[in-house]
Length: 219
Image (tube, rainbow, N blue to C red; front, top):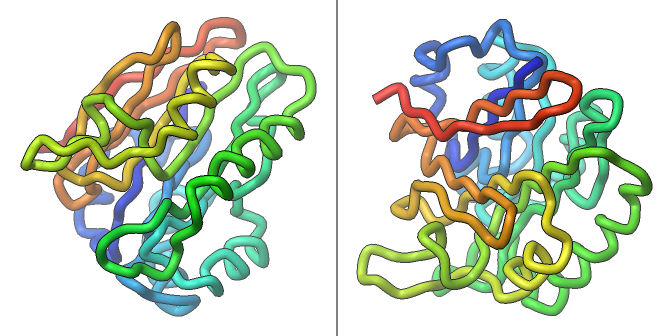
């Protein structure tokens, strides 16, 4: 089994057809930022474009998505924000979208304390599992994945503390476009595929026991 994960689409869907194995994947995971300050109609356009390749979609809003994107995802039963989904027996996925405040005043921003509380509350819903994937739009602080082009680290201390404590089998993040890459917090691999328009995606593989993930690019 495998899933394809990407995010920071920002309504740019032109590279979907170039993602290897997208149609054959067991599902598509969208980590956030479907739109550019857009709402329901913009999200529909993006999700319909993804569904033309693979209709099995799980998604959450990022900081660039209006509130009604969250509502729309729930209506289509695709949402993972503050939810836990079982992808396969023993394999669960939890999602936390949006971001902490940015200099740009984007629609989907919450205080750091709220984001940290959401992580704990969503994890409490997971119950028993053998393997856990965390899809968190905002990256953890002080990693390769939260660094701006000027070198400043702008990720969340709450996300970092959560990953340090819980040590999930995999974390997939996004939000900071220029920080595409891979890092590790303890035993947890953390991957940021960057913007879809730049070609980045993550392939997540599961054979019933072993979970692995690879950072890939179509460019």
